[in-house]
Image 1 (cartoon, helix red, strand yellow):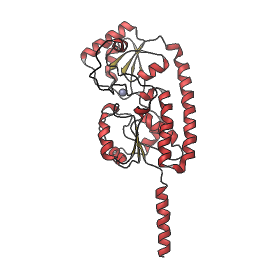
Image 2 (image 1 turned 120 degrees about the horizontal axis):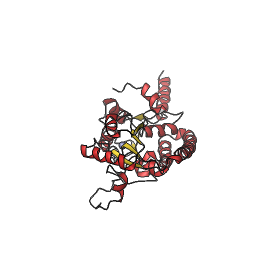
Image 3 (image 1 turned 60 degrees about the horizontal axis):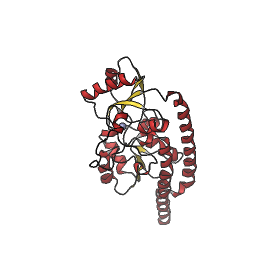
Image 4 (image 1 turned 135 degrees about the vertical axis):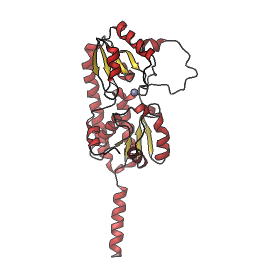
Length: 290
Ligand SMILES: [Zn+2]
């Protein structure tokens, strides 16, 4: 009997050792990217559901629990979610942390003004601004996602060498699908290069730069704060002066503001955060989000 128990303990400890690492991600696009690389092995958890704004989310107890149980935390980094930095340090001090903002191929500056282009060319003193004044919406350039794939893969393999082959195969496939996606978007947007548009919050700098389309303005800044009455007047002026053909709202923000400024211009929806990503939707079904 004693021998049997020892054998059982051995089996248990071996299977515990071979457990798939518990991976926690911050936003749905990062969850989706990591899920592709973990395909057939496991699904990463998510801290910020896409219905919430990553710029100012208050973590729920279930999200804090996921973080506390994490072996690996893969997140954009403190520029997108400054409120998450302390929690990662406090709740997951021993996990492996990968801040993707440190590994992007393309890094663009933070924009603030309603009229985006004018601001970029304004001469003003940047000397006392913190060094991390870059735009954190880096995932909206697929070449950044491509730069992250090998980093994510390396972190997973280091914790889970048993599944190395799967991670490497998935990683190669994901790099290839990002290539296809990039070409598809180039082709889709080619006819619209000269058509000005206005966005709800300034999340699309990377997307615009990659695909050579340009937002004439943003109702709200890069950190999605509520626009002041003055900014709303400015944006109405930008819409009129630029001849914007469309104002884009986002699924998780109040489109009433967009309706108020858009007047006769068409209103569309673009989603920078993966509101309808299949990975998130199937993950959400398994969670109660308490
Ligand atoms: Zn944003």
